[in-house]
Image: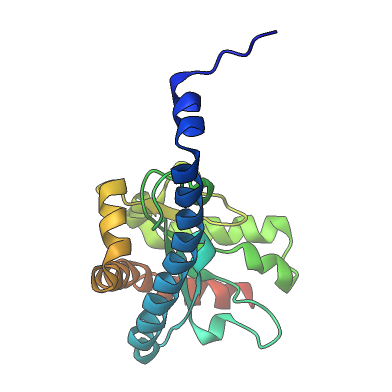
Length: 198
């Protein structure tokens, strides 16, 4: 049986040395981008701390997270954390999101022995407390058990994301702007956590 190669496969084989070089460059780029995100996360942390928030990052996932110390326990992850993410373009490390995003994650509430029904009630209570403002946080894939509030920043595309990754100052400004919107939810989250007694 004769295998018929398409034009792209032929190009890859014929330019194999260059292809291997690109694969190596891609690996190096992944590490450098993780370093870039970690560096920006450190700056965001210095900016957020005076406002009462702690910050960490998931550079591999292209995310920066923030939370109030009152939402955490020394032995466990924060009950709720706020995320700005989606920095990598589509296809990079299996990224499928078309746009950057802001999300409120509650998946760690399970570590605090909250049953599914309680976590769902917490999600509903958050949206009720936000009133009409909750509509801004109803992305198609919000999840009452793990991420009840989320927003895709549809005005930003892959070209914009690449520019952000190449410019740490622009990435820092982008993150702080988005976190300001997330931090505005903190009082509501505080009140609902207190109502939960957790």
